[in-house]
Image: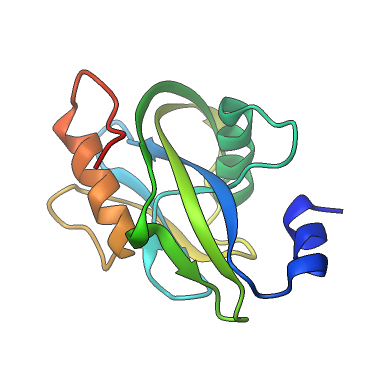
Length: 155
């Protein structure tokens, strides 16, 4: 049983802490990989919740492959994010406080598929023509595109 499902069986819709890993992936033209979420119909970087005992780099590789079909390798930490703008309400009423770990990653294999059960579309977008994003995603992408030497963590 998935950890979050197990935890929800005890706490119901109450807010829980979720550790989310996500990836900043670009193609050969520097376009950014995004997924259009089925729950809110906004675009987000690919990623998801870590499972118990899962290392962040393994979790992001698993999530990106599940969501996009691409095999990636994490290369560098962009930032760790949390706070009020990372509070999330799922359509079913579940509440979460997200701690987001954001990596730069490169494609090492696989073949992109256009949709999965969590997403209705997967596509690459030029940085100057991004589609409607989740608000938290904009902040994370701004840090990724700034190419800072050190990871962001205290904003």
